Amino acid sequence: MAYELKLPDLGEGLTEGEISRWLVTEGQEVAEDDPLVEIQTDKTTVEIPSPAAGKVSQILVEEGAVVPVGTLLVVIGGDGAQPAPKPSSSPEPPPSKGRATPLVRKIAQELGVDLDTVTGSGPQGRITEEDVRAVASPREGRREQLRGVRRLIADHMTRAHREVPAVTWVEECDFSNVDLRQLVATVLKASAESLQEFPELNARLEGQEIVYLDRYDLGVAVQTEGGLVVPVVRDCNSRSVDELQQEVERLAEAARSGSLQPEELRGSTFTVTSAGKLAGLFQTPIVNHPEVAILSIGRVAERPVVRDGSVATAAVGYISVTFDHRVVDGARAAEFGLDVIRRLEAK
Picture 1 (tube, rainbow, N blue to C red):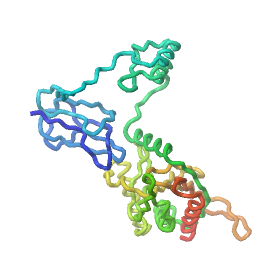
Picture 2: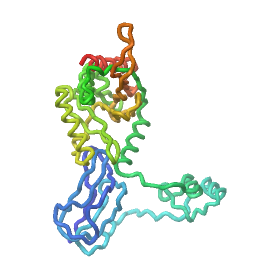
Picture 3: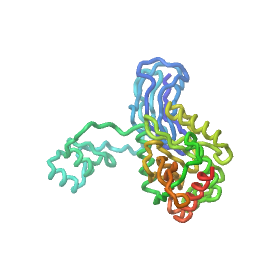
Picture 4: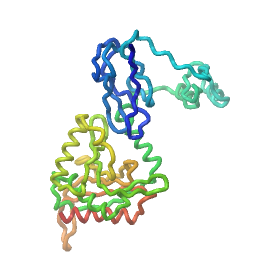
C-alpha cells in the first residue's frame, strides 16, 4: 500500500511552504516517523516525519519549490508510479506555446525573440513582456535562486515596505551608566517599561482597528549565516536585566545553530535591533510587520559631550525609532524615544 504525504496545515494561518531540504532519496527505506523533509515557512523550519515505513517510491517536489498546503510531496511504498490525478468536471486545456497579447508579440518582434522559445510566467502559461525582455537581455554574473531564510526575508521586507508608511526618529543617548555587555538586554527592559506608557507603539493595525496589546514580548534581531531572524523575548516588563541577558544569549545561540522552536519566533509586539560594532551611527530599520514600531541602537563609542560648560567624553550612541505613521503620531514616537533614553541614562 502506498502512503502519500501532502504538505500539512502548519498553523498560524500559513498557506504555503518552501521545500528547504529533502532528508531522504528515492529508493531509500524509511521507518515510520523517520524525518523526511524540512519545510521552510515564514516563521521557522519544520521537519516533517514519514507517515509510514517503506521505500521512498517518488519525490514529487524539488528543493527550493514553494507549494501550497495540500500539495503531494512524496509517496512511500507502492510501485513508484505517480498517483493519477483526480478527474475534473471541466479540465483545463494545457497552455499552447507562444501565447501572448498583440503588444507582447510586437515587443518580441522588435527584440528579435521567437515566442515559441519563451516559457510564459503569466496565467495559464501566457507570455508576459517581462518574459520577453528577460530572454532578449544578456544574462550576466553568477545567479543564485532566492530561497530559504533569504527568500522569507525578501518577502517579509517587501510586504512591510509596501504596507507600512514608515517614519524614523533619531536622538543621541549617553550610555555611560549602561553595562555595554548587557546593552541589548538593558534596552529591552527600558523599552518594555516605556511601552507601558506609550501603548500605541505596542500595538497592531488589523483592518480598521488598532489592537493595543497588554503583553510585552519583544523581538530581537539576530544575524545568522542564513540571514536575519527575530526570536522573541517574553515578558520583558517583568524580568530583570540579568534574566533578559540570559534569554537573549540563549535565543541568539539557538538562532545561529538553527534550533529555534516555532513558538520562539511568534507573537512579538515590538522589536529591538542592534548590529554592535557594525551598527554605524544610526539606522532606519524596517518595521517588523505586523508590529507598528521598531527601535535600533547605533554604535556606542566615546564621543565629545558638553557638561557644565566644559567638553568631556562619554559613551554616546544614537537611538532610532521607526514607526507606522498610520498608528503612531510623530510627537508620540519622539516622546517614547526620549522616555527610553531617559531610562537608559538614569541606570
